[in-house]
Image (cartoon, rainbow, N blue to C red):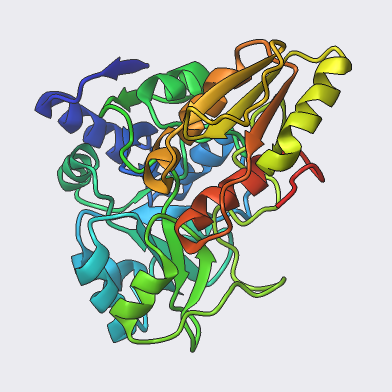
Length: 331
């Protein structure tokens, strides 16, 4: 397994590996993906084995451009092409009715997730490969997604045939997922492309996910993106009290704050503070990297300040809620 800057020759070699049924980790603008030939069910099964991912949890197929949508999907509505023109390449996944996508990719469903990633290395790989690449995040299932090549190397080790290093991911959280497989567009996972931006492009209202029994998509489980260390999210007004309780219990604790220079942050020397940007784009870009760092730093517990409950922070709040330890998230 190699980690290298992706020269043209390395990208060609990675494309050959994909054709041979291999696994290639590659950067996207959101997180690093673990890719296999989407048309090869045996290769796709290697993804599930490498990640420890349940077979009914669907994957997203990555394309070089929208020209092959009608191979992987069927009955494609005009609004899908409208969204593709507005947001691709970029961090938007569309759920459509399944065409020739293998059931191994779709988790047994008759729908398929598709996107064109907005990262030059990913696009060069997809162009060299000449087909669709099925790719979830390149980490063990349910754990914190990787936003740097070294995250993949540290976690996946020899389970990947090659890692293409494209530097830190510019977005840092997974793509927005929008279903167009029903009569009404449905938002399945929030991301950096907001609901209002999608509605403006569609000229149509978007509805929320069905409570249960609806279309399954990546990142919809209650627990996901989680560090191994105990992790809790609290409003700033309660975070100091919670930090004091953990410290009194003898737990070495780190706390993630929004912005810096706040006068009201806890001053307990046993509570180690860390700071992320005070606006949602910068915060999202660095969130997974700091969670991974703190998860391996010997802390007994991790805390985070809950962001505002606004549309701009919706994707970050979604990831924090799913990554927090069960029953410990406080909105």
